[in-house]
Image 1: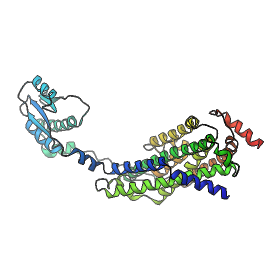
Image 2 (image 1 turned 120 degrees about the vertical axis):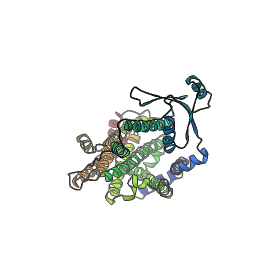
Image 3 (image 1 turned 180 degrees about the vertical axis):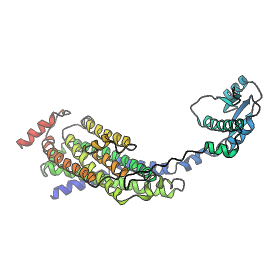
Image 4 (image 1 turned 90 degrees about the horizontal axis):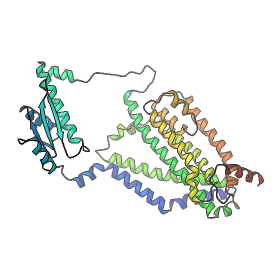
Length: 415
């Protein structure tokens, strides 16, 4: 048993000291800090926002003044300038860079404004969007005057309809709670997805590396392949918890210390996280990791070259991606039959069941059943994987086919 712990801690310590791990962690930390201070970075490099001058040809001679007033309240950086020359000269002025764009306003048959906006390209739609909103406001005012509506009547006409959703199910989440839960679940789904896909692949690569360097032959002479497999899984697991812990602490501190982004904590539901949600997040993260880590160790033991690892674990990657995509789809419809059924498929359970637990008020037996399905699947996969691993680590040569599982089992029987 001492050899088991030796391999476990050796895997953890050797990996945590590697340049790739340190550089990846530092880059991730820099990315988190930069993202949480993105507004300050933009202000630092961007300086003061430049005014955007737009030439306006007002064929009605009555729209420009109210349009300037409304646009100024909407976006102070947009300056509307009366342009007295022809439309063709206005286009030339835009092409020469004198103006951001040219706005031509005329009246239709109902004496309401219609507009055409000319700019060098339509990729930047911010100015056009603000101008559209301003003209729409002017049009509403003119239409109200034609219908003899006063300001109060116009306000009532534009007032949004009152629409309240009430759930009849007992203890169902409110709309506000559901919005917060959706943001939290979305963030945690990303965490589970990237952690599983990253560290499971690391296990397969680690096993293949030791085989290709013939280190494996020395290791299995002092420790059984089964102990070696689980030592690798737990060692990489500790590594993942270390890295994720550092990233989460720095991310939380950066988020809460920035005044501009501190309100996002409430938006994503971080300010009012229930204990049960945290427990389920940890449980499904750990179980999902062990499920895919065991599968990755099994597949990694079948290859002798590092170059073959990606090809061997591609189907496993597709399973992770499929589970994540279904979970993202389920964020808007978490109670559909398709999502419910697939949440009990072991390779999808870590993400889908957690998504359902976070979004819905499920009876206790459903998440417990999902956890039981995962535990049973891990045990079955571990027993089978240990047998394949025991023979697979002894196989060398070109090996990138799933038919090699049979060869590995045969070598295990002979041992």
